[in-house]
Length: 295
Length: 301
Image (cartoon, rainbow over all chains, first blue to last red; front, side, top):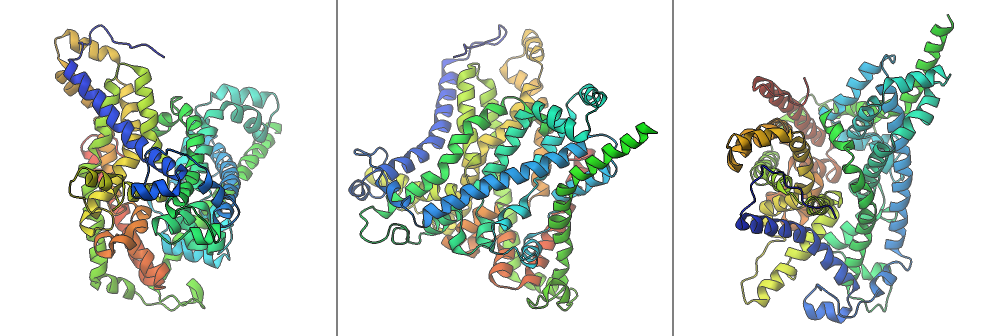
């Protein structure tokens, strides 16, 4: 725990001010944490408890994993989970590859066509093509109802590209020159000099891509048939729009209340974000993003 | 001679490296951008974008005469203005609060917690709000338990606009502090110290040291928001449109979605989308001009 650091010139705050600040901070933390607590608790509660309590539970008296066992027992949610993991892993890898190579080429001075390409890319930020033309393009390319339609149309994100390019440009020219003198070509310089120095930036950009792919549902609703849906789109249909979930996933004779099952799906869709969040968090402090925001 | 050849070889590697990313932008951005010609046509699925017959400005004329379109524009701008008034100051206030904390471990903890909702998908955020504020949710059963009136929030068109602003605050206010905190971290500590020694109290220091430091950021974000005034949370609105109906929740983007994707009237929907894109780009350009007039940097130079 780091100690309090109060510079000498700073007045000691009044107790009232301190209490008000503490209150404000507590409210912020509670507003974020209580919703998550409620969904986790409800998903772990028993049917009777949820019904007795009117639909939700703040702290289950006898926690059970029944709801999770039901939805992970094959069926829609299990399949959707697989789709989400697959799209996230493959999509992130492809996006990183294409973003890194383009960012690197645009970061080196004097590349043939570098300037126009950069302007071409930045212009798309100002003027996105629009939903209908994008949809018709995917349709005419024959990508409808393929998992590629979730990845290819969003392959490179301009913001991520600018972050990486800025980071690559921050690497001292001397390192490039030294590698060049050792006889390394541009590809070797990228692989053995630039990438090892850019781990923090790569981690942040990779995690941004992963989060975006994991959270994406609209393209799935646009391009995919329902039996190919990822988890977020299943969640949207069965929890937000309120269609029945228990019948479809758990078969007949289930004893779990829909509410506990719904909350379990919600938890499963949230947990990967919570798991990678500490890693993401670690890099915020390294100034990767603040440097990028300035550029 | 050898050097020249080597240089050309190296730049060829870079060109090759550029290729996949460039191909993506050319195909999926510029290829799609060209597809906007459909706004001037009557889309016939069998003939595709290029074979469909031209209608000139027919789609735009229909759009300008369609009251549903103007209702969507009005909703969009109204929600954007509400966000500007009720969301925009929140990250700034939160950043100032966090910045004023002298206990760095507390500060880091609150920051971590506050950033988190930004990474949660809109589907989950909407589901959470339904669970907490719905008829049988935490809030209403709590009010009921205390013998108070329950409030009708979820599915109530009158409560929709405040609800979506609250959702944006919950999801993004914490993350929004990051840019203000970065600006605040740039301030030289000695400026505060010098001001304090000269007898400036906390308020004067705030006014003369802190505020000038965040002013460029405030202007930049305001410009970006004004340029983006025709976009308000498409996913967020689409997820909740069925529950409250189009009168309260239709925005330009959902109008495009329902006319085109759902209704199959692609040319008409593309016209509305193109209108939004052009006006949006003009707004960014104008806002940037204003920023330069004010002596600020703006989004681009």
